[in-house]
Image (cartoon, rainbow over all chains, first blue to last red; front, side, top):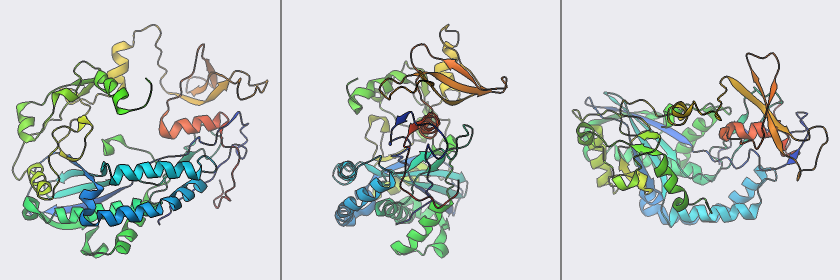
Length: 231
Length: 195
């Protein structure tokens, strides 16, 4: 499990009189983790931005049943941890119910769980954003001080649970396979990010997890979203 | 609206959309759509960005590769069935200008006498009906917002006759609520960082 920055905060601590006791404020933040892979092309390419949405079954193939059972067995632990993290905003049994519905959506209904955004960076570079669409992580947003102009602290809890990391690993392996398949095979050159030095071609889960963990930590806790990046 | 479901909200997505079909060049580049999943009369412009098919087109190559891997072309993700590969539309008008909130919902209506936009004005907190009396949670009401701007030396209050709607986004709404005294007053976590 990868844990990222966690701040704490309280109204009384900041000298703000409590008018309505509402533990849910700022909790239950759901934020998709994004990893980026970059590869060069052997020939100059053209083309605009495109997108692919894939189910867990598309990503994990024959291993999907195994992954589904493994994640299902982890749900009680996810619910317990998320409830503890939420400072009383969410009950463990409610979270477990919600997580079971989410698990069904991913593995039974097979809704898209992975998004690939393909960007032609220039004539020789393909940049792919890999978004895990349905993380089990739950983060929060809280004030850091009583000063209204101060930025709130955003804590997405990226990579909080094993599924959140597994789907990123699955997408990364899928993308590597993709660039070696069909028409892309004759177009694509070498992977420059992360590259086979940073993450070997047949890397283990642990080696991928190390790279993903670095990305989790490098995203600042205080996020300023640039819409042009995600639209 | 009885519930937050696809069925109950979908009509409003269609109502908000003013869709422009792709031109022939864009179609040749891969733009596809299904008319029944689009509104034509709404204020938010949706259409394809200028694109033409060139040599060694990535869209074609990615499409073929993904098909081989079992992921098909999706002719219109606005159906709500998003699995697949697609060249998707954007919230842009036919001049490729982004159809943002101001263009779609403010400029055409700015002369309305009951619509006032205050720019460069920052909301500090909600103001309560009884800030001196300390009413119970059941009786409390918001009667306005305290704001600050560069033209006034001090923060001031904008009063609401009827209601205050807080829609400041995922990251600011919780902050405004907390600054207004709405939130979790106590925690059990020991904070490792000094604030």
